[in-house]
Amino acid sequence: MKRVFQWKRYLDWKDLTAEEKLSVKRFLLIPVYAYLIVGIFNQNFSLIVLLLIGYVLYKKFERGRIQKK
Image (cartoon, rainbow, N blue to C red; front, side, top):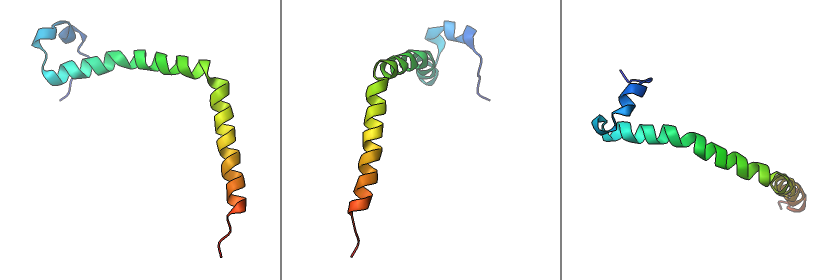
């Protein structure tokens, strides 16, 4: 059975297996990556929305011009 809550075990870093160390690193870096992604999204929100609107309009107009023979 896989251990889920093993904080006391994580404190003994030297005793962890390579797979457990990798799991801990991933778990601890998720909030950092999420913070960076949310920060970038908040700074560039209007640009992202503008690009999405432009993409949707481009696809809409492109469908009307192409005709199958």
